[in-house]
Length: 161
Image (cartoon, rainbow, N blue to C red; front, side, top):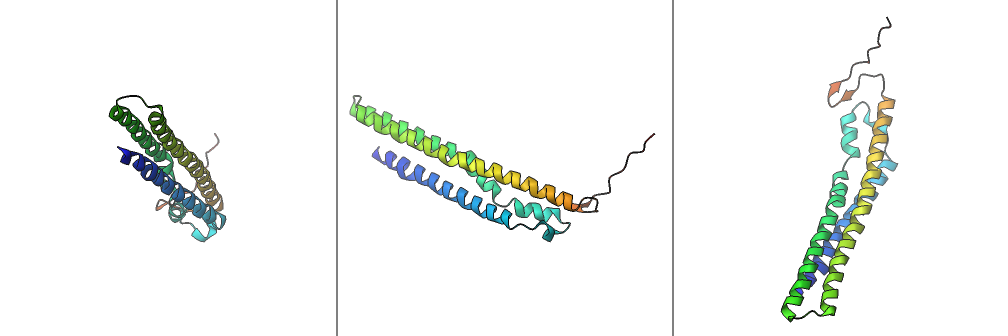
């Protein structure tokens, strides 16, 4: 069952490292995109603006929501390794038990270390998206602009009675 230790150490923790790399890389790319974003270049095409400003955000959200589960998988495998070690030796060896539990806790901790910043990145970018769309709305307020392919009519002023 020693291979299970390698699966947790290299497989699970390696996967979490790759997830972390992509989360940071996509966040940096989106951050730089928002720095150079010119809303006026989209004209009255809100749909294209929304598509462009929300690219890759779902990947960051997916990493943030799934990293704890990948860490939990490492935890379960580490505990399985611990019980297997206890069962194969026939007695409780504190060193073997502590090794398996440390491995399990390491996977959990790294899963959270990947998930928490990813969720922060996603929330930051969601705020940037909302601000960009509000700026677009303010820029084109009062015009007949396309929202989801439809022409938006001018607001009706209420009659005072």
